[in-house]
Length: 297
View 1 (tube, one colour):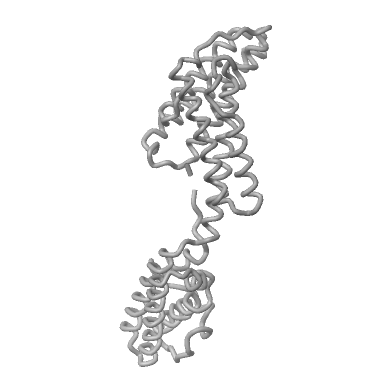
View 2 (view 1 turned 180 degrees about the vertical axis):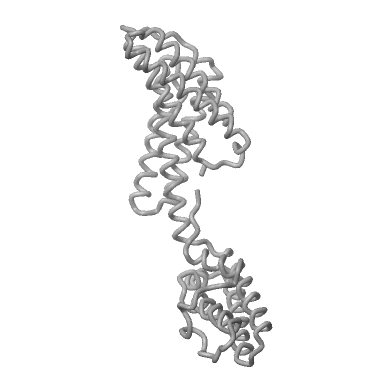
């Protein structure tokens, strides 16, 4: 379910590994000043300066050392040894050998950093997942409430459901989004199982009575909005399982938008019955999209 940013430090590491060209803004700060008349010497010195920043001053370096991951720390130490060797070789004028040591250092840094979770990114990702799950719970609850009460009796423990949601909200309020995911996911699963059971029992097929066509139109419009929310959640979830189905899901979503737009125009013209028929077609289209994604509706 779920878009990812690259931290500034990771970007620096990637740039180093990819091209090994950096600006001279760190020149002379973390590597000894070395006379460098040649362009290649200056470039190597600049790489050493930025490499020294990553190894000695960066936030990620501190996270690795504080992680307690002995293997990651050992690999980071190897990276530092290659860095020190590269400095010595550059002083001797052995530029190619120095660059080889820089490359080895960068490879070790990359491995070491990947072994330790980026805590800020992990928290950010947990917040994104929490928001997605909370929206999922809200919309599944709305869908469940649309079913007649006498048809859904015993399918869902509302007290337990509310308890899980409140537990998640309480943990999240303590700035612990990662821990808050488990109870919220359980709440979402409870609702999805209840909806699935309702479908298996054919409780989703029922006749509603409306006091007016306007009331029926409003009902179908609300259903359409709920289905759109669920479909957009699936599109934004970035699930590898649904990757091949996404183009078709988008096509069905666009088809619904056309039907809904036409329904709204018919409603404005007071052709409410025709508008309802168009919305029903749109809702069936969205149900197809949701079933494609694996949702039992």
